[in-house]
Length: 586
Image (cartoon, rainbow, N blue to C red; front, side, top):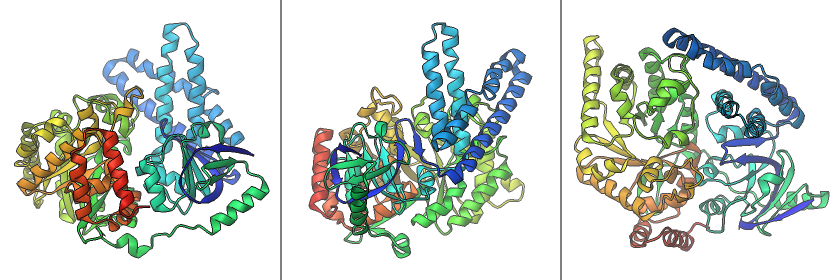
């Protein structure tokens, strides 16, 4: 039995088997029940087969277009798939240590990395990049049937506790707390936003442990005591019995069907619209179950990961149609492909394009020829998507949104292509209804010309993830500066207010999506800034409704006025947390 002392931020005592999440490495490590090991090994084998087929398709295409010399570059990765030190080694880890396949693959890569780092020959050392690319492909294919961390966590068969290096509020908000009893993190403090959320959810939590993820193995029994500021690893029978008794006396209230379907509103009746962000059409059911009124952001670029060839107009049409019918009468906002030139050339799973997919976070750090800019240089690809969208518009309420816009000229060019796509369909005898066209405000240039852009479009969506990083010149994926990525920076709050005011003056709707919307503490401040439409991860919707229902809009407006006068992030955060404590979030 081992005791680690931290900071109890939400009282209560719970026990359960540990699920270990390395948020910084984007890897979830959990114990797999012995009877499910065969299924886990099958997932790994399917990933290997999909990866092999993708690499063979890429090699064939490169060979036809660029010659056998360049095609041979992929031979090394194909050989690695058969190396006993890679997939067979991962299979052994799954069998012997009862861990999930994703973690096993990551462990194998870490072992390879250590070997390559010791090699003196520069050429051989550079082959680490081939291993990294192949491991990334294997992990991507393992995730093919899993769309979110919630999906992984909800698959757990026993009561668990979550042990993490750090937890974002948006992830905490989407965890299924009927399966996960409590959490502990290495990072954090009493004023941690995640701590506020834990207290609101009545989930026992301890933060600031510093070394928990290194000392706890998946499946180990752990007691989390938020009252006594500690966690206990491998508790004895007496300690475990006391924890179980305390846990039985402290069960947080669960939201029923009526709560999920109830529209969001503040305590004084100000109506708030909460939509969902989704990446795959199959996420629609989860969004509806969570209580989303619509889809505020469908990331259509993920269509490129689910087809071995570029999706045709008909294939896209069927997906968009099913989404619109499935979400009716709610609105579905589809963001046109947000990929960059590198992804289009070699990072998609499409054999005509090559390469492996990369994370939303890494994609967000890329600049240059991306989003609408890239779509305008690929007019045929863009028209195909636009035709599919306009055809589907007859089946529900659709909005089309252009990403990564920096100027009016791009919007006008894109709208011209929309008109051409509509004309193509009308020539085929297809009636095209009116479809609102909007833009994501995620680049400072767009934010500071929001009044000009508002004359050209029907709606705005503020994309805070990119807007924050570009405004503050911070790459979220760079550990050296990622701590400077701060949503509460005075500049960010003022930019958001500027965009909201421009939309209000132009009488067009404006919504906000991104991590800020999924953080209940920040959500309350955004309502105070005058925003009433948000799009967030589906699992965060229930908590957002609960938090908003406890607060008055006039209090939040007063809070926003005070915050806008403060010069530093620390002062803003202190004011925000003090205000939420004075109101009703406990």
